Structures are given as C-alpha cells and as structure tokens.
Length: 94
Length: 134
Image 1: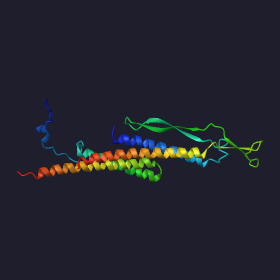
Image 2: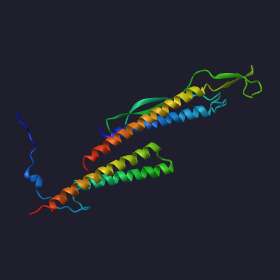
Image 3: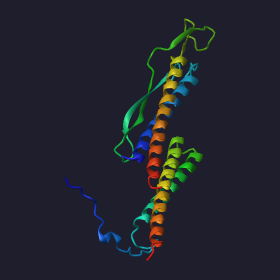
Image 4: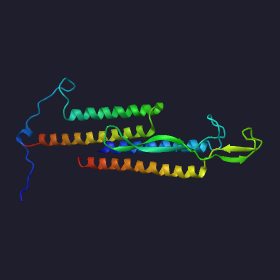
C-alpha cells in the first residue's frame, strides 16, 4: 500500500509578479475576493434601502444582509491567514 | 449547492409562508363582508403552492402558484331587516370559519419558524467552517 502525498512544486513558491491595482491588469486572487465582498455589501445596502422604501420584502433584505456578513467574515479570515503567513516569513532568521 | 442555495430556498419558503399569512389575514378580516365588489359575500381565499426554481442554482424552492377562491356555499343567516336579505329574509355570509383560519395561521407560523431555523443552521455551519481559518 502506498500513500500519495501532495507534492509542493517549486514553481508554487516562485515570486508573484507585481500587478497594478485598479489598472487594466486582470483582477486576481485576493483582489477578486475583495471585489466580490464589496459587491455583496453594496447589494445588501441596496436591499435595506429598498425595504425602507417598501420595494423589497423583509426576508429578502435580512437574508441579503446575512449573506453579506458571512461573505465579509470569510474575506477577513482569509486576509488574516494571508497576513499571518507573510509575517511568519518576514520573521524568518537568515 | 452551498450556503447561497440553502438561503435562497429557505427565502422562497419564507416569502411563500408570509403570503399565506397575508391571505389568512384577508380571510379573517373579511369574515363579515357580505357585499364584495364581484357580488355576493366575500369568498375565502386559498393559497396553492408549487415547487419553483430558485435563482440560477439547482435548488428547488417553493412559490405561491395561484390563489383560489373557496367554492363552498355561503353561510346563511336569518335577518329580514338587512338590505342584503333575499325574499325569505336570509342573508348570505362568507364561508370563512375563524377556527380554520387560526389553525392554518399556526401551521403557517410554524412553517415560517422551521425555515428560519434552516437559515440559522446554514449560517452557523458556515461560521464554524470559517473558524477553521482562525
């Protein structure tokens, strides 16, 4: 019986090429997540405003806000993870 | 299938149940309406639900398919003084039974709560999963 361990290719550790934020470069990785979260939060905001105006049902507004909250928490958790990994590497003794 | 579709499905059920409660409110409010715009006493409204696609996900939610009117004969009471009485002095009243409506309302309310629990469970599961990252 053999155990297949996932291999970490050296190319995975290759330096990330810097990209201009907000420029014409395609959004990738974390930026995509941020945009997604931003859209979800905006949508929840619109739903809340719509409920105040009587255009949107209560459940739609509440659930949109709930979804936005969960999405935001996921993004925060990922951001904290990424930052922790970066700081760990930064603190490596050479 | 993820948090999105669970919440979408539960949301459709919450909307459907609140529409059902709206119809119950309408029935209860019109328990004494003997002269509706379409002639005769108010007819009790009955909601009919059917499975429905939710958004672009593959989840099947529920929606209010149509609102039927109760075809059972109206209650009649003897009141010769009423301007709506027929030649025998009988007045036709809506066939709404407040007891049925109350029981239906309890069912609708419980169903609403059950679907709220679904949302809560899905949310708790999602937050517990996020905790893995912390």
